[in-house]
Length: 91
Image: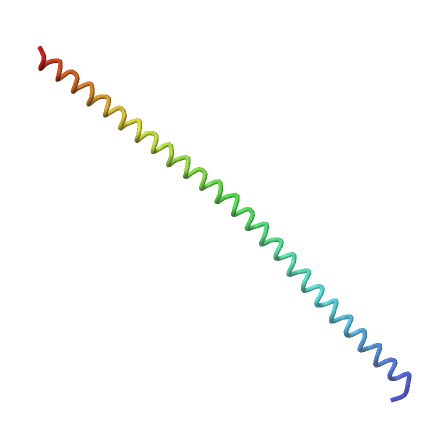
């Protein structure tokens, strides 16, 4: 192989290496784009789940408050009944 054939072969090898490098860079770029999409999707899911969790906690608190109010009302009614009963017994 003479000098110009070696130069041509070396240039072809260099171009092939550059082509392979560009293909690898392109693959990495696509991978990064996919990762960004996944990250955005995770962020959106996090926001939805956080909203649902807050809503569920609020509903539980409201239910607990209603239950406590109902218990308080029952206790008040029982106390009133007992007071009335005691008044009747005294008379």
